[in-house]
Image (spheres, rainbow, N blue to C red):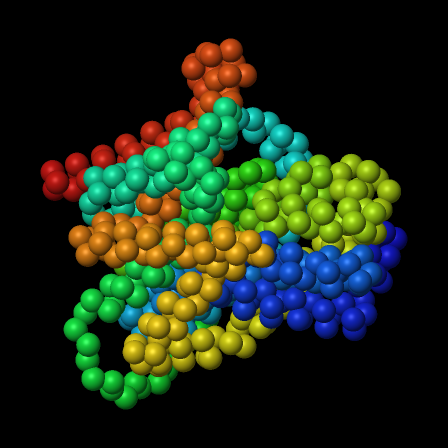
Amino acid sequence: MDAFIQGFHQIANLSTIIWMSIGSIVGIILGALPGLTATMGIALMMPIAFQLPTATGIGLLLAVYCGAVSGASIPAILIGIPGNPNAIATVEDGLLMTKKGKAGEALGGAVVASFIGGIGSLIVLVLFSPLVARLTLAFGPAEKTTLALVGLVIIASVSGKNILKGLLMGAFGMALAFLGTDPFSNQLRIPFAKLLATTPLSRGMDLTSALIGLFGISQVFFELSKPFEKVAKVDPIKIDKIFPSMSKLRDMWKIILSSLGIGTLIGAIPGTGASIAVFMAYNSAKTITENSNGKLEPLGTGVIEGVFAPEVANNAVTGGALIPALALGIPGDAATAVLIGALMVKGVTPGFHLFATNMSLVYAIFITMFLANIFMALFQLLGVRLYPKVLSVPQQILLPLILILSFIGAYAVAGQATAVGIFNLGTALLMGLVGYFLKKDNYPIAPIVLGLILGGMFEENFRRAVKLAGGNYLVFFTKPICLLFIGFSILSIALPAIKQRRERRK
């Protein structure tokens, strides 16, 4: 109790409140701009954090972190462009809700889901961080391979009605992931290797640039291909409802709990990230809604359930990623890697020593994480009635603006490296053209991103696991966690197939 009181005194001052408020606003803005990630926001605010007391500085960075993760849902819901890869799964139902005139409900629901995910994962962090940290240590290369397999199987679920097209796009995404150099031999394995050896492509396809091109630029091209209409007066969007009803929240309790569990656990596994968590949560929610006897609406039709599942999961990742970061000194994702760096610069070494000798700072971090989620929800809700005004802007103005922001986002990813920034612009433009032609033929885009994210993870861990097992490919069938994930993958394929066969018989 004394340690908790000391930790509370470290952040119980006006300076901490002001800096965390600023951090939350900055995070939401950065999250809402395509290409600008939470990691980038934390890196930008680190020079300021270094000048502040340790607890206040960490609170500022955590506020940016939570704000950026949640803010990515804003463009995903309004214009179908995820602010960062964490919001990919929010696009489908979120954008459909906007087209149905339910933009306010989708945005408000995303805020509530983000808050539930953030606070829920914080409770797990406080109560079970040492236990969960030990559990995640059991995830070696073999376990990560089968986890990636689960993610790849989900491609079938996000492919819509044409599973064959979805699998084809997933394979295309994996092919893009294999560009660059071999992770073990460091040999180039890209077409025209000698010609492209000196280009940024030798390091592989940049995920953020590809994402911006596939979702943002392709949509602009798609809209521009339609016949132009005269600029008409756009009626303001009415926002009557923001929060989902309590009865709806009660009906969604299974979705909330499953998404919270998936997000926290995936966040706690180093090297995975929220991109996997959101698709797993979405797939889980899809199964839950199909077995709800009509209480819940089917995902993919523009329903709040399809916004809630990924938003609970990606915000649960924030607390989950802090578990190995604080308990073991191992970053759960790129953002917590920067946070660990900030702690170490301040002379604080994460791990068992931190819990043994400086428990007051640990409690201070827990409290600032709680405040970060409060500020995130507060500032997001204050803007819910303002964000949809973007849709009132005529397309002749909105489309060029989206294009400019997309190019700025792709360029900004490179930081100060001008040549890389220019190359990223070319990557975004090329993927935008690819996405445009695919959309014209009704090919799903989400499986490409899923393959791009998971392809490299699957290959690298698969090869490492086989090498460590002395070339024994049966290693994946000798570990309990691997068998669990393999079983889950088989069920994910078998259950929808069985259901379709039953429907055909009926």
